[in-house]
Image 1: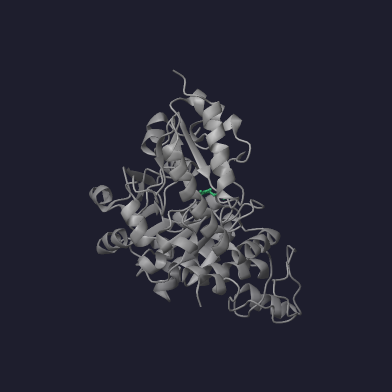
Image 2: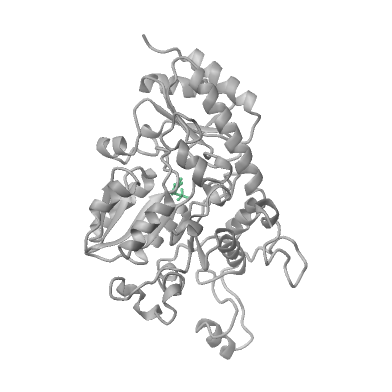
Length: 414
Ligand SMILES: *Cc1c(COP(=O)(O)O)cnc(C)c1O
């Protein structure tokens, strides 16, 4: 089956007890057992069943199973937010004294998280890009993982996953990829050798901006060893599944960032139209980027699907259909003009989110990156005059007209 068909034909597409083609929402905290013995069995994971929603919930399980199938992974764990997913994915295998390598072009919240990790004795070493050339020199005996974004937000640098996975594996390291902005429609990082995939499913997977959530998918192929990742020691019975088992049965249950059942349901709904939405948004993004490039007073239009992008060849080669995603950025000459342009938009909303069906625009430096230092902002490709657009599924003509009138109304300051 091809993607759009498979999104409507997951192995659990129809609820086996009711015939419902959408999963029932188990909007409960806890589940009744038939006996004390049954409770004991369920708690010890010796019998199937559910006890308490922080530990497992059938609606969450449906979302997790579908994400694992979609990414081609061995298992998935859903979290209350994308940031919870990024935190859990890292903390699952890092401890005080460890280092990891990350590209510096990362989502602002993730860069902030690295400061928190620093207080726990875990050090992020930031590479100036996600290329092997920039990452390899930072690997040392303390390195425990490599973390990148598939398409960095808002730098829009595409990572060569296959080449980076080869480097990581040659040094005995797992590659973790935040694939939020690529989505499983454009990229399956596990198929290219990545070991763990993370999504902020608040974005394209949900699709309507109706709930915050995140998900971690384990490829189940990395040969973990308990010497380098001691937290995995109790889970080494099946070494390849040690990561996901430790995450599900230990860290995720104890930190407690479980997803609300209703929000898991909204993600299951979103998955059905993921392919349609992402394809349409990518087409719109390319059309808008091409139009913006021709407008006077728009500088450095950045979109991976434009020939002028340094990621153009890789986008063609690595991303499904050569599609460059649905985010684009451009510069306006000054912070004042960026604000003026945003204020003139009639079709695009000023909303701090991406992956919505609506087109959203934002000034990253004063919003999502306000926690970052000027150096961090510069390394992440965030400038004072930069606007980021998350292109939606409207009619491209309307979007082009909207940005054209806004650019004209907010004239360059001479
Ligand atoms: C939004 C986002 C996150 C954080 O997700 P939340 O659901 O907002 O917690 C992480 N990584 C990327 C690339 C994102 O775009």
